[in-house]
Length: 131
Image 1 (cartoon, rainbow, N blue to C red):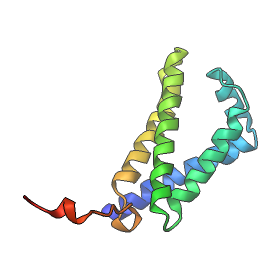
Image 2 (image 1 turned 180 degrees about the horizontal axis):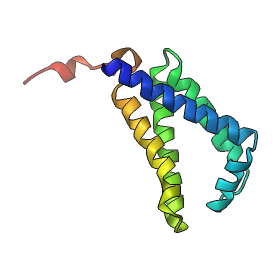
Image 3 (image 1 turned 45 degrees about the vertical axis):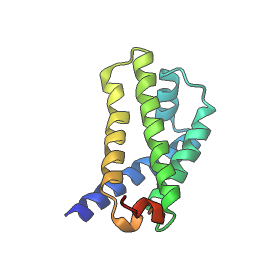
Image 4 (image 1 turned 180 degrees about the vertical axis):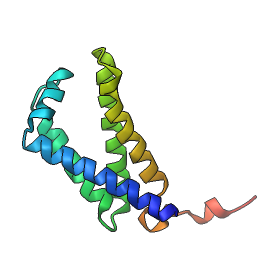
């Protein structure tokens, strides 16, 4: 069940990131409107579009656990910044919901990752030694 929940959250997350990333790179009207609404310059769409697209690929692709860690972190930073931007301009709560939902999906995907998709840290002999 945990694996199914992971793949549902991860599939949804990667779909959202690809949809948003490609939408930003192709300058979709609804995303232009969203960027202007929070007073962001439109060139930021190129940065976010590239970042979201690459994060989706990194998260869904097999292997590369360190890259996945960075991709998840980047999505968390981006969604936190998006939420803060909406708050800073006094936007409606309705417009604050999408970054919170994406942030929540990101956390669920990250927390439910199977061991095969996690970064394994190497422990030294000193770490295992009990005095």
